[in-house]
Length: 409
Image 1: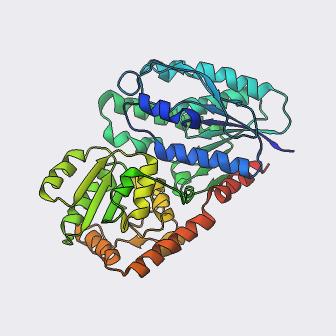
Image 2 (image 1 turned 135 degrees about the vertical axis):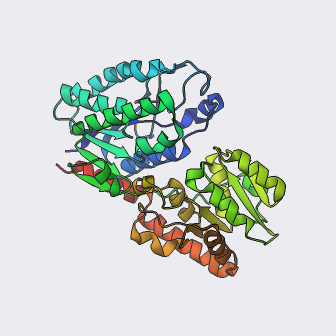
Image 3 (image 1 turned 90 degrees about the vertical axis):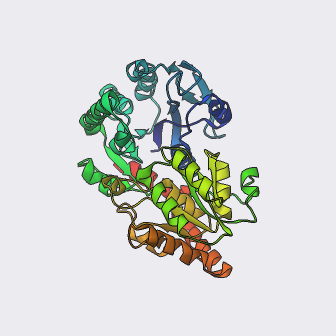
């Protein structure tokens, strides 16, 4: 007997992605979008059975985050194997109201799926522990106790934004965290990005761990942005520019690297933007590109001399995440300098140039060590890491692990 999967996600339908992006006033969740599509494509590649995607568009509220006060309903297709059976659910995009009203149009779709007579084991796959999604899992199991629920958790919500919130927003975040905790009992299986997540969530049901999925190595990747720096030697950081992720330490370390022919290119947005602009006035080697398209980021990674993830292992949240940029960086074929985070399994140790301590001097030394390698040695090290993740962490391998897990009775 095959599976009858309903994937409840927060992604950008491919045929609408450009249109959606043009309506957004805040950044796109590129990493989460890429991971979901890799899982969906991988499940199909592994012949998972019947699958439908039910989508909740991941945009911020009108008017500050998105130009539309209502999200349109439209059908799309995640694969050419079927007609356009996937559905982006229509709902309100008004702040506060959306937190309570949007569950109802989703319930209508959940009910249709849970009660239909399609053959196969019914599995509801949730991407992320959003309280609304967990409530829908409870609803589905009430309608049909035979429904099995698998929740994929890439980041714990309480660590994703809590440190940046204050007042009412922080109180609401705490409320959501507690609400989610009360609904985890309706989940039958979990897919996590680190084993420590299971301890934090006090999981007592089966779970499996995937650190993420290595992006496909697109040999025809073109980018006008990356082309401008093709013949330059540069250190690259792409990601959120919040101080808790180590961007301040990277800027301090780069100031200690005196090679006038090496640039530091930074892509992203966040609280450190003003610091970066001030440092640029003192050091012309620093290039700040702001938020760039994912395609540009991947192309820039591929052409860099060294990639840096400056997130240090000095906060609790590092146990509960495997940074998506780590997987991207390893896939680029360029050496990675990073810290040994608690959430990184030991099998990666041979492929990452770890910084021994949290001082800017140590980070500068490790970056310089890679920069001082001969081109042959540096390229060889990057290609070895690339081969490891391409073979062991690609979308087919990782999705098969998920599929085998949810297929078990």
